[in-house]
Image 1 (spheres, rainbow, N blue to C red):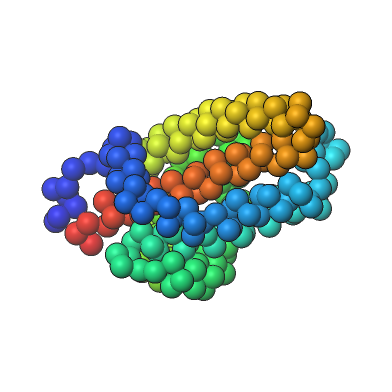
Image 2 (tube, helix red, strand yellow):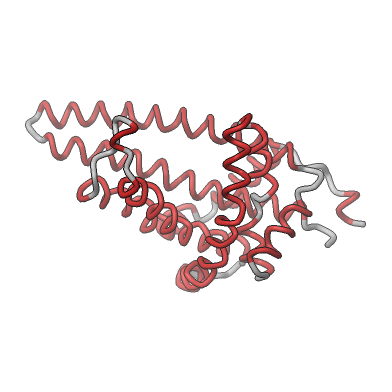
Length: 239
């Protein structure tokens, strides 16, 4: 079969594919995802609860407002971008319709796998990340093949049967890269924040620092969607 003769999936290949699919229309892709990531982050920065500094501050309300709601809204942008990347000639308007339409199935799929992946993370971390890697193609499968949530999870599990560890390594390196980029962005944002504060514009400084962090989050969402499409295309060859 074609897939048996295809080059094996590699971490470097995934990264090169991500850059290749995002580069041509990066501005359009960013504009598609930003309302669901950057805008949401800025609204929470201005009007949301303060980030918890202790476990006692991490109440259910804080978790819902700062974690759950942004994740759900961000998923719309990620699904929309996944469709744009997987559908040559597609428009952002059509992509947003797809994102909203597939959101219930995507959330159901996430709800199904969350207990298992969470248990794996709590136990030894690596099993949880491995399981997350095996289900990494939930979004692309939903977007391209349009099955139900359970069928999409089964399809993702089958496609990644021989590449689970490769996807895991890519995810781990991606997480480390994002952490490094977030720390760097936080440092840059804080530096500008201190500058604005020194000029008597403390509110502007805080806003700018939050904006830099939100932009990094948006780019991560874009890269995640692109990686899903790249991996799906590679592993689905010959099916």
